[in-house]
Length: 329
Image: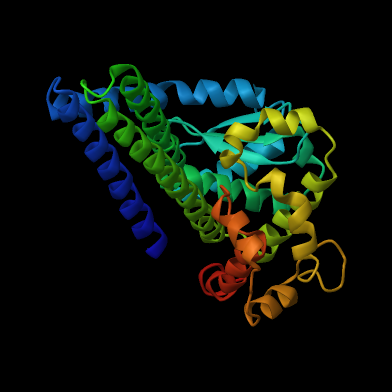
């Protein structure tokens, strides 16, 4: 509930900032009413809402597969959808080699769950199902729609900043040029702040989806091991051009591929027997341990779409007792 509350507060804050800035700029320009500027902003958000699935689909090179083409994948998705009380999402396989998975769509009925070619041979069935449970939870929580809409707010701030700065530079002092420059600078500051708030929201939704996967009957150790293997798989991945291609939409992924090399070193302290998996005993040991991050690690997380992986698996270790009482594991 605390994760959900944080997300609601974040949405209210971001839309409050958007309302205040657009209304303020509109009044300063002396054109139109506050309502007209809010309508304009929501038109932009509506366009973002409509076109975002096609943008993700093209960028991720998705091939939609039938039950005949991928029977096991469809079976797992159908089972998880049933437990989540959701319509079965569309199932796709991305032609990208980088190991990962993602979900997107406009509504719960429009949900789409995809895995990349690279993840298929990396994880066991239980681990892949735990990852798919994480993605199904994104659909259940509707957070992939929320984060898509929220990500448009910093972009609006950016446009306002450049627009007012340009007006100030060509307007001169007599036409309120100095005020326009100040407003532009303020909008740039708000662009930076809103961008950080969107990143924060993205990190919240990952914790929330991890918990959702456990609620769907997956063991914490299977999701923890899947995340551990994805970190190693991403770190070994050599396709720099492919990594660059997905940089703009990596928030949809289960983990952040660009941080994998750093996370390999962090997670080595969790896999104590170095067998390439995180078992229940290792999760229990992590639960009793205090995770301390360096200043650089904190800054890296602050500017990332995903939580620090060590903290994230620590969170999974805290869900172990919950899984035992709710699923019988």
